[in-house]
Amino acid sequence: MIAGMCWLALTYLLAAVPFGLLITTLYGGDEDIRAEGSGNIGATNVARVYGWRLAVPVILLDVGKGLVPVVFAEVLWPGASRWWFGAVALTAFAGHVWSVYLSFNGGKGVATGAGVMLGLAPIPTLFAALAWSVVLFVSGRSSLASLVATGVLVGVIWQVDPAILPLGLLLAVGIFVSHTANIRRLIAGDEAAIVRPVRWGRAGNNQAEDPTLLLERGPAGGAPLAVWRVQPAGDPS
Image (cartoon, one colour):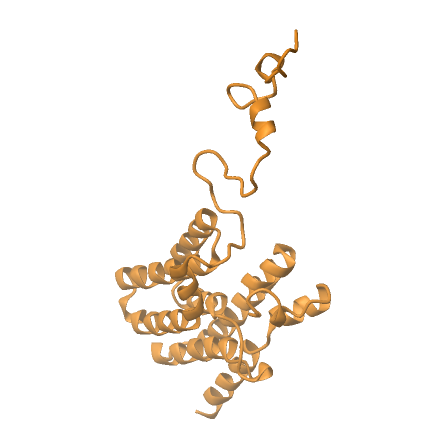
């Protein structure tokens, strides 16, 4: 009992480490990640402010602080019930979202939640990671990708490992609650993209083009053609 409580305390303290803030402070610029972009310390805001060079290590570290406590708990308590591992998983998630080092503020819990589920239900987690990648590629919005991936995770767990479904549902509720502001922005159409989304058809251009340049284009929109240009009145050419 005492060993279990100590492990939960250690899990919380590890998961509470704000790797996004640490990485950007050590290797980023002068901008405080908490005062830029969305103000969140997670990998999404790190990517928005500093790019993927720093965001990728943050993702891996945030996944690791969910995965490592669960894996070691399985090694140390091999015959324990699913409820014990669920307690470790929820403690890791809570540590990331409500970090004692940041006055009980933190990230959104997606990467850390993925880490704990990777240790407990690897196949559903891989399906969820695939869904996250596809939605991020298509929409460019990490919040939408995370919400869709969470739904996929719960759905696949329901089909292949229903015994762990209560934990999956609790994590899903936590992720949706931590994304409340993002959901409002998605509904309003104000959520910013962190990668360039897929453009179906001809690529869009947010800047208005000079009408003179449009007139000088060839009939197919290619390079300007001399015969296509509008000649001034009285020009013999």
